[in-house]
Length: 214
Image (cartoon, rainbow, N blue to C red; front, side):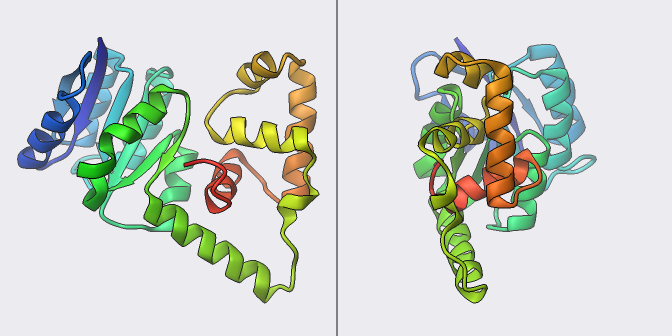
């Protein structure tokens, strides 16, 4: 049974999300929270496979709650719900261990697909967010007169980039590609240098802009 934690301060929203999720065979909403602190407490008790968190909640917002959940329940994949396609929110969310970012107005259509992506070890971002980031990236490159830096990466580096952007650790990527951890770290450093990235959150954001992950 796949256990899911729901956190939103509006009961009617939780009810709707629960209905959508429990249509899937083998899924159950194991706990509900109306604020961020309660979400963190339930995550520690339940150790759910997935936590679906609203950003705007009392006592502790969803982004901060996600950071706590990443520490106390590292196997829990976190999906953030938001009314806004905001890059600053997304960057903060990624820095707090969030694996997916879903706009609320697309929840009815994409919620189940997003949870399935996370359960499959992938990331998920609403198409509207991916499109917005892609446009911003293209405009930025054009304004600077630069060519696409993605072309600087080798085939292996592109492969490593996608797996890291999907939320996999160096160890997991090494096992999938049957190479050493140190080799993965070397590839990671080269990717960061070639793309002028500084941390994992920027790497994921780049992958979203380039539509490498969905």
